[in-house]
Amino acid sequence: MNVVERFAGFAEGYRGQALAPQVLHQAKRAVIDWYAALLPGGVISPALLLERAFAAELDHGEARLALGKRASVRAAALINGAAAHTVEVDDIFREGIYHPGAPTIAAALALAQSRQVSGEAFLRAVIVGYEISTRIAEAMGRAHYRYWHNTGTIGCFGAASAAAEVLGLDAKRFAHALATVATFSAGLQQAFRADSMSKPMHAGRAAEAGVTAALAAAEGVTGSLDIMEGEAGYGRAMGYGDAGDGPDWERALATLGEDFHITRMSFKNHACCGHAFAAIDGALALKARMGVAAAEIARVRVGSYRATLEVAGIADPATAAEARFSTPYLVATALTHGSVRLAAFEPARLRDPATRSLMRRVEVVLDPGLDAAFPAQRAARVAIESRDGRRGEHLQPTRKGDPDMPLSDAELEHKYLELASPVLGEQRARRLLARLWRLESETQLSSSP
Image 1: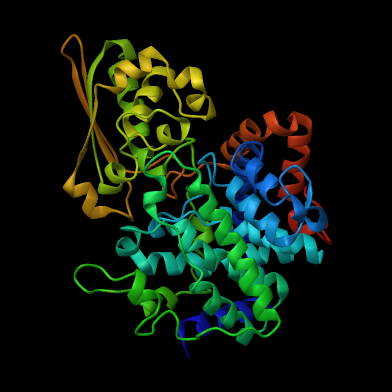
Image 2 (image 1 turned 30 degrees about the horizontal axis):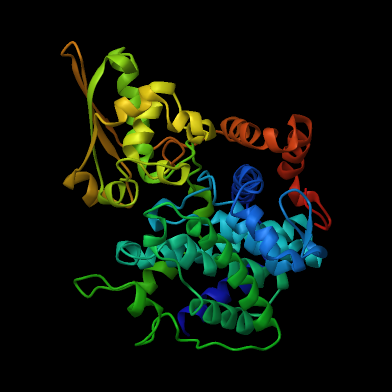
C-alpha cells in the first residue's frame, strides 16, 4: 500500500474506536486555543479584506466566520484559516515545525457546520487531521523547512484529512483526497521575511485546499496514490536535504493510532513567532534572577538555533508584522514591559523609545549546540550585562507552553479570555468557553459557537 492509503486506512479504522479521554481532552484544548487565535484575527486584516474579496460567497451557506456571518464552506475555511494564523498565537507541533490548528480546525469546522455533524464527530475529525499531518510534517523535517512554510504546505494534509473525516469518506476516497491535496501544497518562507499578509493566507489557503480535495474525492475525483513516495513525488521534490536524505515514511507511520501527537502540542504563551519564545522566556527569567531593571541593562546576547536568526531575525522592524518576527524587538519589549501580548504590536508600543533603545543593544547569534538539537528542542542561551558591570547567563532549555512545560487548563483559559473577551465581550466569551469544554455532547454543529 502507498503512504496515503496507509494514512487513509488508519482514519477509516479509527472511526469505529472510542475516543480515549486524554486524546479527547487535548482535542478540546486545541479547539479552545484555535478560537483564542481566531477571534482577534477575525476582526483585522487580512480577514477583513478577504471578506470584501469574497463577498459573493458570504451571507449565505451553512458555514460561519468568526463572528457568525454565514459563508460557503470554502470561503469559511479560507477566511477562518487565515484569521487563526494572523496574530501568531496558534498552536505548534514542535517536531514538525508546524502550526496544525489554523488550517485543520478551520476546514473541519466549516464542513462540520455545513453537514450539521455532532460535536464528537467534529473533534474526531480534528484528531485525525492532527495525527496525519503532524507525521507528514515530522517526516519532511528541516530539509522541507529550509524554503517552505510548513503551515501552508503540511497544513493542506491536516485540512484534507479533517474534511475527509467529517465527510466519512471510505479509505479509497480518503486516500485520493490526500493524493490530490499533496499537489496543492504551497507556501514559501520568503513570503514572511518582510512586511506581508501572505503568511496567514498560507493557513487559509491550506484549509480551503483541504476542503476542496475532500469534496472532490467524495464525488470520485482521483489523485496519484504514490504522490508521497514516487520518483517525482512530494518527498523527493520538497523534502530532500543536501545529503540526499529524504522522508522516512515507515517511521512516520510506525506508531499511528497508538501515539497521539495531539496530546503533546505546544500552546503559545506569547503573541509572536515561536522561534523567539525561548529567548523571551530566558530573558525574563534572567532579568528576575538578576533583579535588574530594563533601563539598567547595557547589553543582551541571545544564542539560539538557526531558525531564530533566519525567520525571527528582523533587526529593525517598522510594522507589527515585522515586529512579530524580530527577536531583538521581542526580547526588548519583554524586558521593558514584562510580556509579549497583543499590546506589544500597537503603534505606540512599536515606537516606544525605551524598547527601541534596548532593542539596539540585543544581539542574536547562532549557538551550534542548540541548533543541533532543533527541532525537537527549542532552546536559547541568554546573557545580560548591566550598566554597573553585573553579568548573568541563563540557559532556557524549552519554552513555556511546550509539552515539557505545558500551559495548564487554567492558563489556557486565561489566554483564551484575554484574547476573546475584547472581541466578544467577557460574558459571551465565557459562554463560548463553557460550550467548547463540552463539545462532545453537542448533537450537531449548525452554527458558530
